Amino acid sequence: MTQQTPHDAIFYDYDVVIVGAGHAGTEAAAAAARVGAHVALLTGNLDTVGQMSCNPAIGGVAKGQIVREIDALGGLMGQAIDASGIQFRLLNRRKGPAMHSPRAQADKRAYQQYIKQAIEEHAGVHLIQEQVEDLWVEDVNGVKRIRGVCTRGNACYRAKAVVLTTGTFLQAIMHTGEAKTDGGRAGEGTSRGISGALLRCGFQISRFKTGTPPRLNAHSIDFSSTEEQPGDPDPQPFSYLNTTIGTEQLPCFITYTTPAVHELIHANLHRAPMYSGQINSTGPRYCPSIEDKVVRFADKDRHQLFLEPEGRNTREIYVNGISTSLPRDVQDQMIRMVPGLENAQIMRYGYAVEYDYCPPDQLLPSLQSKQVQGLFLAGQINGTTGYEEAGCQGLIAGANASRFSQGVEPMVLSRDSSYIGVLIDDLVTRGVDEPYRMFTSRAEYRLSLRQDNADRRLTRMGHAMGLVDAHRLKLLETKEASIAAAMAMLESSRVDSVNGIKHLRRAETTWDEMCDRIPQLGQFDRQVADQVVWDVRYEGYISRQQLQIDRQHRMARKKIPSTFDYQRIAGMRIEARQKLTRIRPIDLDQAGRISGITPADIALLLAYLESGKTAVSEPDS
Ligand SMILES: Cc1cc2nc3c(=O)[nH]c(=O)nc-3n(C[C@H](O)[C@H](O)[C@H](O)COP(=O)(O)OP(=O)(O)OC[C@H]3O[C@@H](n4cnc5c(N)ncnc54)[C@H](O)[C@@H]3O)c2cc1C
Image 1 (cartoon, protein in one colour):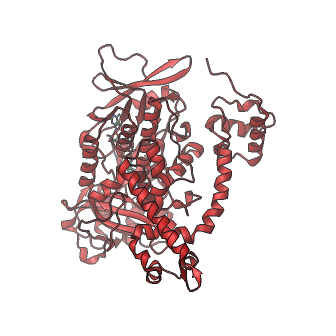
Image 2 (cartoon, protein in one colour):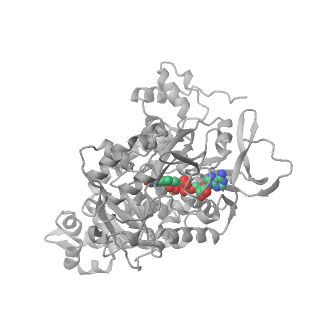
Image 3 (cartoon, protein in one colour):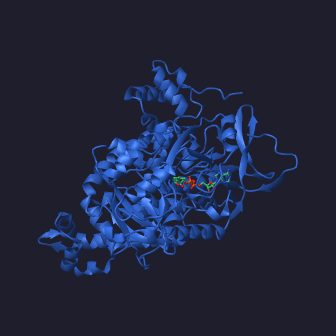
């Protein structure tokens, strides 16, 4: 952290500066500009803007829902994958609509180029290759406030708000067997300076790790020994702006590890950085390395591997399911023991990366840090993993940095509005003890938070915040009008002596059957039909959920001042006081979700807030 900028520095002025142009940074820059800020997006290497560090795919279970929400708020990710996808699938089609999750393989290079060009052409964003090395923070009587950032080469970017989205790069070390190299991603360097600046500002910093599998040359694979996995015959777009996907779909292929692979891994565990003690930090439990899988699931004699093309114009194949940091010689042997890969050539070896992250309970629900006013954090730096988790945080942090620079209230999404609201609330209220990824089970209102209705949940709010343009809002309004017209048609028609709504509510009734019985319904497209069917079928559950949501909103109206002194609440448990003081919830609803805070603690807090007694501490001086 610097208070004095270098005496020979060159200064540039912006409203908002974003550091890092990965998935969080690009969404942050675009969102901040849409909300009206003049934005500088600074990144270490212009050739890796929007790069997919690991899997060339977007979406998946719960993640696909996030991409639809990003799109409903006017973000980039949905349009980028629609333009660059090579295989689209709607996962969990046989389950209920809350579980339907879109996923697409991307042409990695085309995805990145789409994002880079979208940023280059974005009004209000200035994309610049700069390596940021220090934060410029002003400290007035113990209150810290961001002034800007300083880069390698003595440039200082002055701004009212800064968003850090440095991903896996802070103090990063890559491991392949015993070999260690500095860098946050293969072929790239480590980001130094920012961790130290954060520590000096009073942030706590911890370390996580993640890993990636080897990439193979398709020319050297015998696909006849593998199973082909095609895309959907009717590929669905991610973006609400698109109605079809017109590009050719490429297949993926499935093969399996063998007992011989597992034996080889066991025999070499002492050379695996996670087992030799070379790496001590925690990795993603649900996305384990192959070393972890053979140890944790010792009873399984094979694990599924997906062979996924990295693009249309490359023969590189991503081997999904065999993330590893074993030494190169073991990776060479291991790959060749897999059916179809007997002669496979490795083009890139798998590796693990260890990096610094900031435990996210140091943030407010706006993603602004509690330590430094005007400093926002988003993406993997907050202990999450995944492009979608990073992108949505970027969008919210960027919008709020822009709003902060204008002196207006932040945009906070509630848990009942979106997976994005669930994700951010989990991060800032509960913190993380392993890399956080989204699951449908994390959302208590998942029946309402479906991938098909993200526009109906979020687009109006996005428009009110300046994130969504008039065209997107108009599309939503047209859709809502069609849904209302279809509902009215059902209400006023009779089928087998009951009204159309009641008939549709029967589980065995299909929309096509309804169209046969009430031909005017045939005018509505699939998107409208789906909304009508789910609205009718789930009406009972959703109205019961609404009671719970209303209670939560009442609690959320009980605001807690940011300087509230929990030590003064007589009778409150010491552990509860300590937790509340550390997290500093913004309202009673958030306080109730902090782990270890009991209903009794909340009752005491509520009584105190309602008594009118002031438990507000003096600001530090
Ligand atoms: C080896 C590896 C394996 C992974 N495995 C998985 C996985 O299995 N599953 C999964 O979901 N996710 C995985 N990920 C994580 C995934 O890549 C991230 O979740 C996602 O990219 C995070 O997005 P982000 O925007 O936060 O950061 P990133 O995409 O990492 O982008 C950060 C950007 O900041 C820039 N930058 C960093 N420091 C500075 C600085 N000081 N100045 C200027 N620019 C800077 C970088 O150049 C980069 O462009 C893996 C990542 C890696 C590296």
